[in-house]
Image (cartoon, rainbow, N blue to C red; front, side):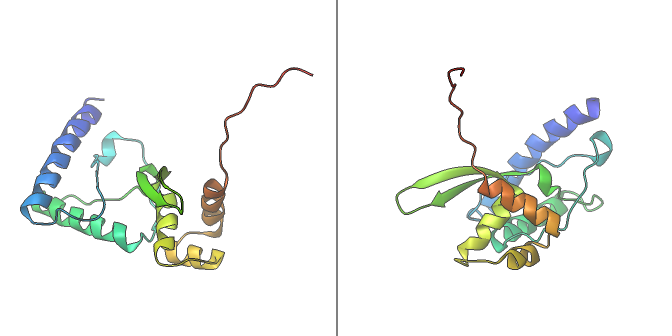
Length: 155
C-alpha cells in the first residue's frame, strides 16, 4: 500500500516535470493535453497490454513522453496500458461541438475519422490492430447510447 501511495505522489511530480519539459523544449503544442501516470508494476494489479495502433495524433504524444521519460531514467521500461486511459474529445458536429469522455480505444477509433469519412469494419480492425472480438466490443460501445430512464407508473 505504501508503494502505491508513493507511486501516486511521484506521478504528480512526474506530470509537473513533463509539463515543464514541454515548455522548455518548445513542444508546448502537441495538439493534445497528455497526462501520464507512471506506476511501478510490482505495486499494482497486473493488466494485459495490447498492441493497439494509435492514431498519429496520439503516437506523437507517446513519443514525446518517452523522450522525456528517458531523460529521467534509462533503466525503466514503459508499458502502456491503454485500457486504463480516458480521453476527452471535442466532437464537432454540424450544429454544435460536444465533449465526449471516452476510453483510449474509443478515442483511437473516433480519431480514425479525422482522415476518412467512411471506414469498413475490416479497415478499423486493421488500422487499430485489434482482434475481431475487440472491434465488435469497441464499435458496440460507441454505437449504444445510454438514455436516462423515466419512471413509469405501475400497470
